[in-house]
Length: 138
Image (cartoon, rainbow, N blue to C red; front, side, top):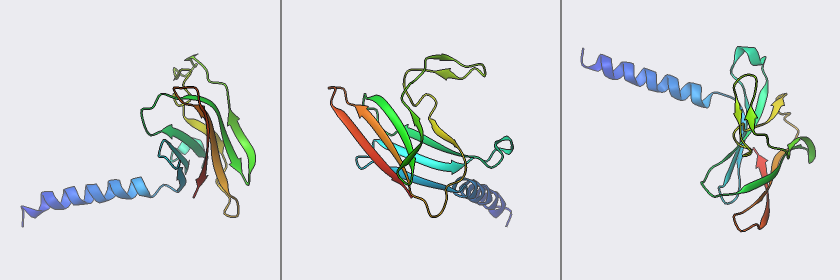
């Protein structure tokens, strides 16, 4: 019986981690080719006051030049970014010209059930060819 206690404790810790990881409300999307991942999720920090954030990440190592990021609600742009900064912010956050050094595209209200949400990423590949990916969040 004593041999089962460590295994039981490990199982409980594992289940607790899984619960916390999957219990955060969110909607997600991925580009067709798997290059981009987008998450619109509730922030679990007390200071955030129930705010939600849209984060965009690049899932591969391809060299790309992102020109613009747009967050759409019912096909209306509610947040966009086309200037990417380089330097250090007052809170010591380091920004580079790469748009994903600080990946949050939107910080605000929760998604509405009757609304549709998309992120549009306009980018160029290493050869300078322009691309636009429109990712639906579900």
